[in-house]
Image (cartoon, rainbow, N blue to C red; front, top):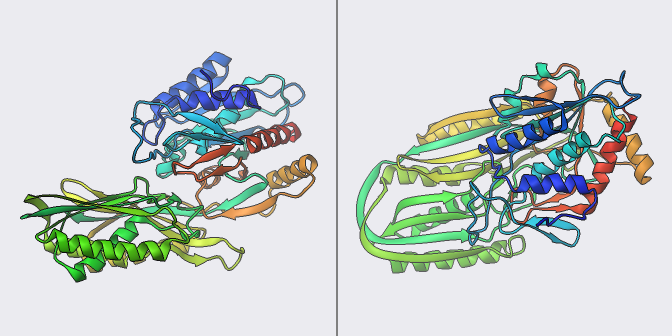
Length: 480
């Protein structure tokens, strides 16, 4: 039974609901690429699919637009997979449970994937509608954007002929995005050298934090569970004796971690538990104004033998967690209220042979980005842990003479009677990859209102989806 039937524009929500039934977390791209490829074949449209499961669908110009320059409509297929602790859904095999609450669509217990499934749904609705006026369209659906824009980097842009592009991955109506930050993923790794000890296991679970997108919400003051875990370990190390058996928090480098679990082993669980409770109560009071739902649970398990991290490596882990910078590092001196440089410890993970800490670094200036990378590399060297980086993508620099920006502004004013906001953002957009690969590309980014992307509170505004879809149609109509 369709949950979104009856919503306007109906075709957009039809395709979004169909996509929501398909598991499409980053790295799980085959089924959603199949869906897009089959759509194109059913509509008799040109389709290109590469080994990275990027999909390009082309549609000829409508009557009267045969001589118009082509245009790219672009979005990404993957979504960030997050679920509430109580959610039993297997995101590897099951679709989402959508529901409507007033003007918003959400998913029960999980992320929604409006970032960026709604872009794909809008493009499909346009490709399927033969009544619209438009130039030749090249719809580009990329894979694995959320884990480093991997699909966009792999795409052979020679399959594209357009020199103008509309990316639909922004999350605020009334805004035209014209520039974004570049980024790098950085990972510090500590070998899990094991020792066997006898003691009680104490599990400290940090939960209820807001989390969020590490580009959009990095300056909001939201508490990172992984950084907080390091702070707790640093404090407890001064108060009592313990060993570290395991620590895990966050699932995506570009999401502010909202959960972290610390597993300790101690000979005196009563003392450790008491010290932890006292400190956690103080933290709750400290952060209450910005993290009202923060909670911590402490569980004590049987006294027996456990494998733990060797003391020298334990110290390195605590040093790294407490010394690593996190959050906003520099604000822009050129654009008011724009974060220029930041980083986020998104993943803290224990495996059989190592503990890894993965950060997402961002900056609108390439030199500042690499300076931050060098700072982390220096820290890793001083502590004596391994370090590597990956996933570099360049900043998307502002284009002062953008015809697309001018056109979108004009259409927006005609439709809504006010000027849109022209904005640079701290988050990364695939516009940066395409602008670097296609010489002379003129691109903008727009999108409907998506709140709390990358969290289980993510929701999509129905009314703003209609507004942005109408804006997109009217922009295409003017592209003659």
